[in-house]
Length: 284
Image 1: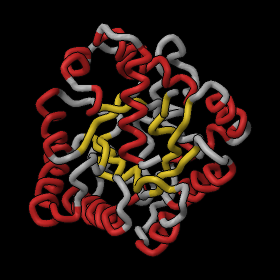
Image 2 (image 1 turned 120 degrees about the vertical axis):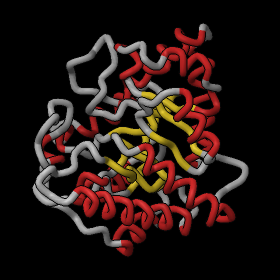
Image 3 (image 1 turned 90 degrees about the vertical axis):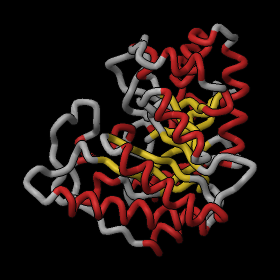
């Protein structure tokens, strides 16, 4: 059994075959967390999760790139323009709290900081401050509901680490002591950065990126299996040998196999440990 801990079947890329894509994974013992990026896709993730008795769960949250009007459409060759190039959304705590209280919601996410897509025509400090305020609000929402967080970070790790360190220092009593309280998804940093997140009580997750780049081989080799999870980030980050095609949860098996190859262990061991870690984090 495998768990794709981060998929966007709730995005428009799957509007014609979402259920077929989900069933294809479930029929092959692959479960999934469908992750929202704003209110619409968060609602849609929950609706899909509620259709299935088991194996499909939801995360709800407001992605930082939705906090600015008329999102710039640069570097979107690997992203869905129909979902990404939308009007901004103001974070409404009550709306997300209402969604997050449903049984099938297992995390708040994806949330975080993204300085890569900041509008160069606007005040950078103002945009960064807004992202930080909304991220902080969603961390508190997660802790108030005892839910883990799924964190997105792009070109903002210094600020993200500072915020998380300050939060742990002041509100460490709100964090669980017997399990992680969140994951940095689609991790693309180095070993030093990974251990900074581990020391904060977080884990990391790998995508199909590791199947066509060797930049993280050494990190994967050194990272304990109980500190990592696997994901597709569907429809993006499609692993080899399907690179260039639309990704889907079924293909998370190739991420697991790559980790096994790098570590020199059986893929069954990777499946067992990453599934155990995902079950522990999301309590499924």
